[in-house]
Amino acid sequence: MHLKISKEAAYLYKKEIPLQAGDSLRLFVRVGGVGSGGFSVGVTKEEPPSKCFKVIKENIIFFVTEDDYWYFDGMEINYHEDLDYVQFKHSSFDHLDHPEQVKMTK
Image (tube, rainbow, N blue to C red; front, side):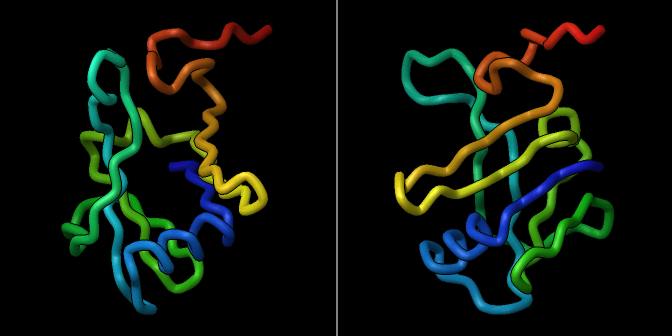
């Protein structure tokens, strides 16, 4: 799985949740807010199951289960402190809220 999490994003999660070195966060697909009809990234502190995809950043284990692999494979998660903005980008989707809208590549 190709999932990139910037050190700035990892630090933000460590600060906001708060997390200790070795803690685990599950990233999952969730239905967007009221009226959005789309998808977004959900985050919860929990222990990873034996079968999952893991990325360790800033001593935090970020993991994705098999059910959510399709959404996170190719994603980059960044945090821009000056804007106080978490950015989710994906190499295959133009719109993460409606991931069926796939980029056309040459």
